Structures are given as C-alpha cells and as structure tokens.
Image (cartoon, rainbow, N blue to C red; front, side, top):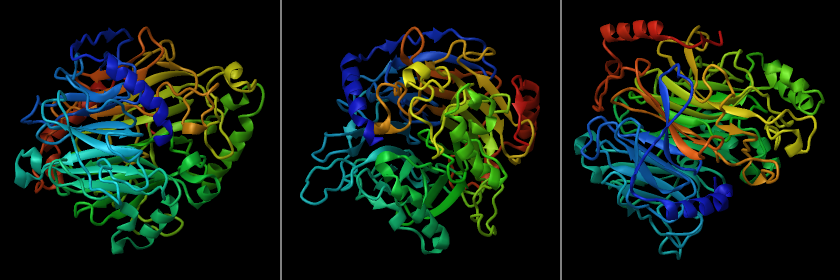
Length: 603
C-alpha cells in the first residue's frame, strides 16, 4: 500500500542494480518431507511481497503453465519452465523502481506487470502503471492512460486521487482467438488521498492504452438496491483492495470481478484510510458484465465488528467456471453472535495481563478461513438470497475454517489458488503463539516481537512463523462438512517452528508500525498459483530466517495435485467444466487414498 512506498522504492531500486539475466541456480532448500508434495526452491534475492502466476494451457508465447514471479526486488519478472525448479531472470526490468507489484498472463501467454511508484515514469505522483511483455519478461512496453487536467502524462491509471495497491488481469475474448492485441485488460486499485473507493481503468487493445479511471461504487447497477447502498456506506472511508479477476471460460466469460475488504461507518472516527486503525470485517465483491460500465456489488462475508481481515490483505481468485473465492485470516469467529462480539473486548484485556494468560484462550487467536460462491457470486457458502435483516441476502453466514483446533495460535498472509469448481489450495503463515490484540480487534504493535523488543513484559516470546499449505475439494460441501482439509507445514514439517521462515513481529499497520519494535521484513503478503496443466500449486513467499534471505517458491508435485479438466470456451455451461462422473469418482478415490495429513472440519 502507498504508505509503504518509501521503504519499498529504496529496496527495489537497489535490487534492480544487482540483477542479471542469468538462470538462477534455484537451490532446493532442505526441509522435512511435505505432506502435500511441496519442495522449496529459491527464486531470486530478497524483496518481500512476491506475486506469482501460471501461464495458460495452450499459449502462443512461452510454454504451457509457465510460472512467473515478481517482487519488491525489482519491477521485472522471473520465469520458470520446469514447475519452479529453476528460475530465469528476465533480461530487462520494466522500470527502475517498484512499490506494489503483480503479474498475470492472458490466454496467449503475454505477460502483464503492474507497478506502483511515487514518481515516474509519469509526471503525476503516486500512480499505477502497466507494462506488457510478449517475450516472457525479457522486454517491456509501457501502457499509457488518458491525461487528466493540465497533466499531459499521468501514467496508466491517471488517477486524480492517487493510487494504492494496484492489481491487474487480462482476457482475450474467444472471438479474437489468441490475438493478445485484442485483450481486455483491467487495472484495479483504491485511491490514496480521495474517498478510498475502488477504481478500475479498462483497456480494449491488449494494454496499449487505458481509459479514464472508473469509480466502481459510483457506477452500481440500479438493481443493486439496498445492497448497493450498504456497500457504499461500509466502503466510504476505508478499503483494502484484494484483486481483480476476469473470467476466462464458462458461462460468465469476460465478466470482471473486483474484490476488497472494508470496515464500517465507525472508521470515520479513526482516521479512515490513513491510519487503517479500524477492523476490516466486511469482504466485498462487485462484478461487471459490460466491461466496467456498471457493477453489481455483493457482500461475501461479515465477520462482525472488531473482527479484522486486514492481515493486511485477503486473497481472492476464481475457478475455471468463473466462481469467486476468498481466503482470509481473522479473529476467531464464533457462530454465537453475542460471544463473537464479547470476545473482542475480553481478548484485549487478556492481552495486557501478566503471566501469558492470553495463551490459554483460543478464542483470542486469528484463524484462517475460506468463503466461496458456486453461482458466480450471488450466494456464498450457506447464505441465502431470501435472508432477512440483520443477515444480508447472499452473504455467507458461516465461513469454512481451515486450521483445526489443534493448530492454534495466529495466522496471517492468506493465499489461495483454485482449479475446477471447489478444487482449492490455500497457503498462510502460522505461529503457535496467540498475539496480543487491542480493543479494536487489531494486533497490538510489537505483539509478536518479544517482551524485551516490544518493551512490554506481558507480551509473549518472539513468534516463530512457519509456511503452511492446505488443500480441499469443497464442491458439494458445506462449512460443517467433516474431513475437508489436508494441512501441510512446509517449512518445519512434523515438528512446527523448528525451521521457521520468520521470527518476530509481522506488522500490518503501514506507516503506524513502530520502527523500533515492528517488523516489516516480509512486506504484506504471499501468493499462490495453480498450474492449469499439472493441477499443482505453487507458493511464492519471502524467507528472512534461513541461510540466505530470499524469495522462495514452494512447488507441489505428485499425487496431491488436482486433476483439472480445462476449458477456454465461454459458451460451455459450468457443469461441463467438471470432470466426467468416472473422473470425479477417480478423484474422490484418490483423495481418500492419498490423504496423508491431518484432516478435519469446523463441524
């Protein structure tokens, strides 16, 4: 986010000067055997906040399922053509510095990089830029935007209110074959010094040029009704953008989704977007079927006041039928509304008590959750379109809890990748320590730094963080379905926290992080992608606690990878995107036979 840019820009500028175009050795990092078949490889030097994407099944550029990675190490991309074992640095960077980055491909295999900078390459400050490569990240062209006011050169976004946390996606309509110059491209972000709304710029020429910024919440469909008014009310002061995704196949092909988290009107009293001091308990999506002209909003889940999903981002993606999914970490959610609300204040009191009393209260931990929609975003999990207040029609009532009660402590940095309908891989960071929280429900600065570093004798010892992955087939399930998730500690194996990838605090308060006690080494997220050819998941993350600080990829192989039937035909009905009955039976048999890790459900 923009309040992190000064640190990021310095890091990225230094990193760009150190990069070469050689093939990275990508050493395999020694860890215990993985339950889900993950092996760790080094991608590049240390940069934090990495993005990763997998190319299409039948590209005209690059190789099928080719992996691309970008991070704060520089505004450029690394690529792997052998499932993450080795990584090649692109011959040239897109720009000299980077802030918030992301990478995606369209169906031709053309690569797009989003980049946030304080200044340059335009005259306008704090803007989002899009770069495109048609040679696997070796060379880049810059996308231009539409000038505003007297500024003749204001970057791709050309936002009068500045840009923060940009995301991008691209889609070639079936009628255009694999012509990447005809791709529909969407750049999404929230503004930094305006109303904190969600905005998009749309390109109809493969990212060569973009139109003016569109305020999503100012272009709601008239049919949105009360749902639109509620989304505007909750979003008016503070938002955190989650992602933008364009449906590539299935009945909703070409639909643009934007996703974000929001607080509620109480945030007007806490500084809004600048402080991020409020708990972001609402998860929202909006979609457009007319290339960004109008939008339909939908609340996916509301964890309740004091429940904070800004750790600091939630993860958002689509399956290959165009159904949306969130993964997120949040204060423990209780189905009893009274208990759910009272836990926040009680945990705040326990956080300041001596003797580590907080550690014996699992209701005070941040757990890891998933919500999803099987009908294109209209209803989520166990929600109902006929729900009556205080429930919101369509919104999930109960989320899927991923981590079992036996895996207590805190969870941050959610990631998610999905193949066919319900085929879900997730990743997150986890510590067995329950981190102290404030009355707002948010983490206390330095809560995981250790009592000496945080200068608070009541704080727990410094937290040790492991990288986890989990996998489930949610198709046909409910949040109460038993034995859904297979859990895998990738960094420490069967003995958690013996070889952690980070030790200490993970601050998610931006410019309000306390420099002497808060830790921003990892920046703000990890990311996961699924290879559409192999069905294997790949996680890109920063590791600052082993022999070489680096960006790593955790790469899955073997029987735990999903079997995915591919489709790129927009007219194909959603059910055909699933495997045939015989194939589905094989998957079900394999799933039960190959379940080697602890499986559980919240039910």
